[in-house]
Image (cartoon, rainbow, N blue to C red; front, side):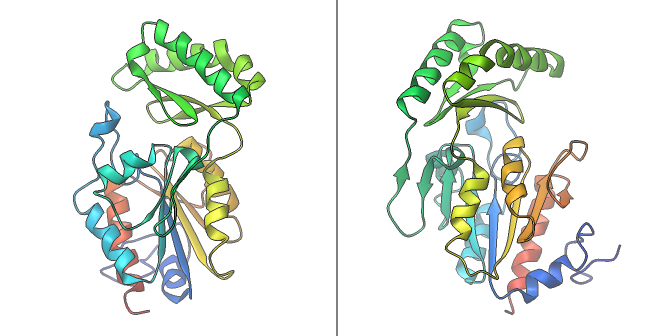
Length: 267
């Protein structure tokens, strides 16, 4: 399919006239995951730096005033802010349990007593196992990272962990979700889809909304965009997804953002 924006634009064939829709929209919202979208995955999460130029692109997009942008991540909000050098954007961290609006007070939503009891029990158990050094504690979740392991060993560990603690999690209003490089038990009640709905609630009704992400947790965001915008999956094309389009990797995301900036420059 031919490029929908122009000879020098970023080709995006999955959605007919995508760039024309972006250019002609009277209001735009762009949601972005961090890991695997703005930054390649790293064995140590704190080493997952954004690709060159990403931070500047986000600043330029924010300064243009043509698009409302938010980072919606499972990471703690302070990590996203640090890795992107304090971008002038709204940051939603910990799957929606942390809200750092561009203008307004920062909020942290804590687990309920039941949820916290479940998290504490699972955390203590994981720390006693031989993979305790790979456990990361967040505001409302616990992530067990399997980066650096062989794919087979990682899959076995993830399945064993979920099987052993799945019922306990359900009893404590928790859920297990896979992510690229591990598995996470998190509090029910908030997810990226809920965060996106809340963010869009303050936007005009005719806003064209787009969300980019590559994790299983981004599927919640993709699902709520049906009929209002587009979900764009970054990375693995083989898995079933609610997204309407794909981008190959973080480098493709850079090209996408460059073209978005160009497409909206004259509006």
